[in-house]
Length: 632
Ligand code: COA
Ligand code: AMP
Image (cartoon, rainbow, N blue to C red; front, side, top):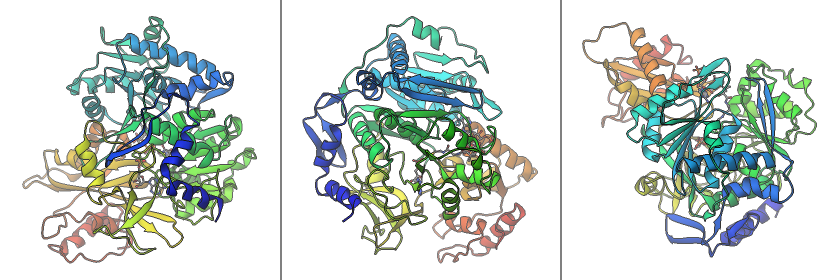
């Protein structure tokens, strides 16, 4: 047996002993009494009886252990021409001060705080400050519109909202403050106060009596100490797309989060304390939570906070410039970023300008890594390119090649094998194990690693219904795939209506709700179609109400604007086509998968249950008019 097998078997034979050993690397204010309380499945509670503090483990611990002068964060912002280094000692000071400001505005243990922030140091400071005082943060990605923010405000019921005046998306200024004001107007729940970080690029107008300037809130406060919280207490809620327009509030428990993420840094990512680690994502996504903020800081690494894009800020060499300049040892991004770079610099000419001799590994996650992109990255970067499969729900990889344990042979298109903490099965609809190499629903045997979600915020029923009901004893991932004869996983597609656009997880059901609300639309469907850079992009089909004879382009323009306004630019919904009818089964189910195959020019079998096969011809014809279904 190799080293990886040894470690995996040691987890599998006694998961509680395995995670108890890992928990020794975390600083506890009180040690746990029980490693795992599994008396009420599928609700699992880890490190019961233990108390700790997330911010202490991310920040103060390193100062106390003599790493105060080490850089904790390097903020690199090509869009503002700024590079700022923040040491652990400075981060402690800034975090304690802001935690005091939150406490001064009435935020207490267990209260929620929503953060609507661009990639600036204040976003990280605010996240850590919440956990310092036992408050629960919920970061909302800046690419979501007011209505999405309002839905999250109503679900999380924050006492305070923290935002910045603006974000910078390449050349575009995103006006966060008006988006926030509108969201608060739309929401039923109103926060007691908002704290606004004014950026030099745009000064926001404050609402009297409600809004505080970041600096004023800090000036009137006493720095706050770390408050011990229970291991099971939520450290954060992160909303993610479900099958309806209402997002799911994934809860992360303090103790399990600390233990699993701290373990992942040396074992999965091969990182040592003091190393520079970079996840080129956004703090609004789970990759940002786990691998921009928490895991690197728990492990005493230096993390890069990059406010820029892989291309255009200023060019497709931006990532390589950051790796060279800050001596990054390993970097994490989505394959879409590499596809964007590859498209602009196919020969990797810009890469040659930089010295990446210290660079050790490239990690990818968020979507399937297509073999072409993998090969391009391997050829040009000349380091292991390691695909990770995981979800917002798990908070850390389910499957990965483990750089810090033993690199197993790579298989293009596979994120390798399940890591300790996860036992993955491909199941038939009846819950039977599929033979090796045959596609099934990917399901994880319970309990999962301690970082995995204990439940959904205030919604145990939806937790059971969404993940636990289909295969008792297993968590249903929503992904379909294969476990091959060597135990390697191949994640192929979603089993629900979620699509993956530029590594962002989006619900087509949510977009359909918006299209259906247009006055002229009788029926609609949204599918994800293949895109060279983003992997998938959404495409809408509209059936108009009888008697509507306005120009179709006008209606398409209106629904595109509605999705941008209600969901946000991140939906990247830019195309729709008007059709006479939608293909359906005799029981009325829209045949979205067949429509997707037609759009992508793939071969397909006409479903036996189809109501009227002639409709597929009509769909192909209208897709051809907008440049799809090229191969027929
Ligand atoms: N705030 C406001 N708007 C945002 C935003 C934010 N934080 N992030 C993205 N948007 C906007 C974009 O500006 C774009 O708007 P547009 O329609 O006006 O152009 C829209 O949302 C879609 O964004 P995106 O899908 O990111 O497309 P893009 O064309 O701007 O960039 C990539 C494409 C591939 C360069 C970019 O998606 C990328 O770098 N992705 C990889 C890294 C990543 O973030 N992965 C996520 C999880 S690991
Ligand atoms: P999110 O919760 O936003 O991280 O999205 C999780 C979903 O993205 C998964 O359920 C998969 O559908 C997809 N995904 C993430 N990483 C991978 C990967 N490495 N390979 C294939 N699909 C992935």
